[in-house]
Image 1 (tube, rainbow, N blue to C red):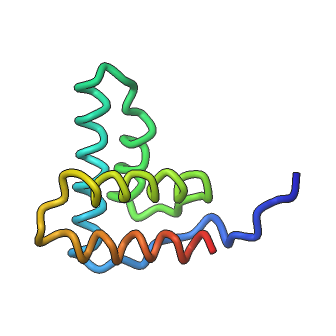
Image 2: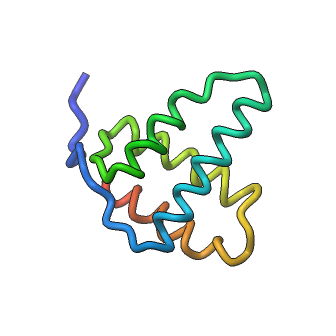
Image 3: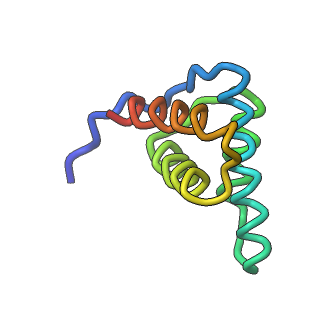
Length: 96
């Protein structure tokens, strides 16, 4: 299998509003997973990495894409819709 051409690990360059929206999307995922009786470790790990300003590897970025899409399609408040899409664009750019 060919290795991906992505530039990982990478730090996401997010402004305060975007970081807050990503934090909220991850927290929403943690709560949903726990409510459904599932393991929320993956989302928690990324939440802590975000809070600590650490890099994300390609697998983590792909998971963030999934988290953000679910958040945008589901419970995102109208005020967070645009910044959530901006974060999703940033994550997808990092994966390109």
